[in-house]
Amino acid sequence: MIRKCDDRDFEAIYETINDAAKAYEGVIPADRYKEPYMPKEELRHEIDAGVEFWGYEENDQLVGVMGIQDVGDVTLIRHAYVKKSKQNQGIGSKL
Image 1 (cartoon, rainbow, N blue to C red):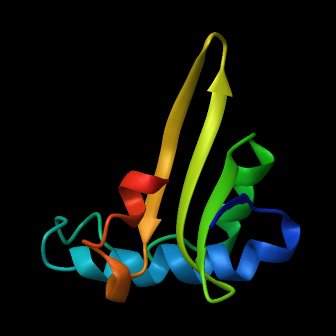
Image 2: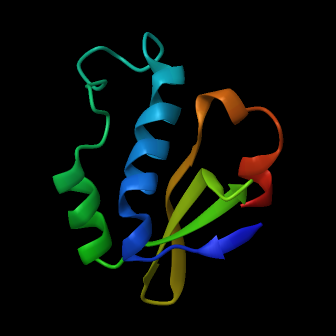
Image 3: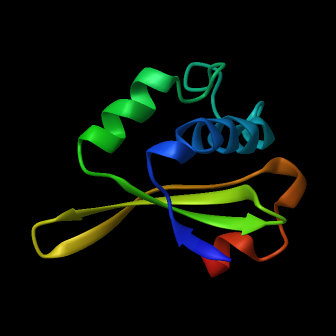
């Protein structure tokens, strides 16, 4: 199920982003990859700047998120993450 995320989902969004990013360790240049990949302060800044997260749920668990932001006449996809164990199953495409 796809649904709009809210403040209650902050921790689940944070966990999803950082779990998903582990798939890119060693692929992303070392000077760009860090742990956590997106610290809580950065996530809060993104949300405060107008990024709206939508989530994909399975069994009441958030397993994928997409952050979008309206800028003028366009909507930007700012973030797209699927938990590492759920990648390559079409969740990102559904989001």
